Length: 166
Image 1 (tube, helix red, strand yellow):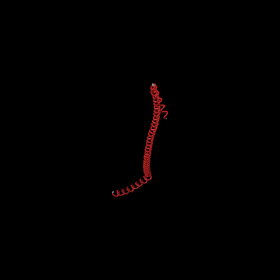
Image 2 (cartoon, rainbow, N blue to C red):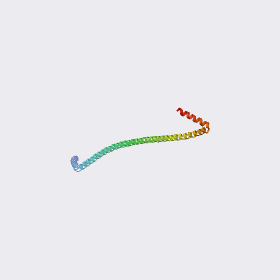
Image 3 (tube, one colour):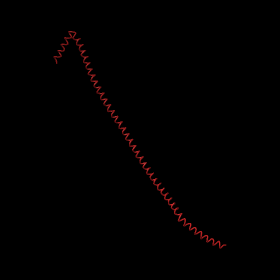
């Protein structure tokens, strides 16, 4: 029996080895290629996905950089516009002040000219009134002087005396 078991073991071992090698051959011929192809395809897909993810990451970084650049440009443009608006506002205020000053000076000059005209008219009127008043007073004085005959003679002699001296 030992011999049978020993022969059986060697025969079994031989057949097992043959079957194993046949199985390996069959697996290599029919299973390994599809499995390796599937693994290679899977590896290629993962590699492509990683490459796409890296590319998307770079594009996202570029977009963020572009966005930052656009934000900076927009801020700079806003600051420029605000500065221009402030300058325009200040210029308008200065122009309005200057125009108001010119208008005020013009009004003052017109008022002074009007005052001067009124003053001259008032002086002229006053001179006219003073002249009329002087004539009225002189007329009254002369009437009173001429009402008395002695006074008339004296007045004529004093005028003649003054006329001869000149």
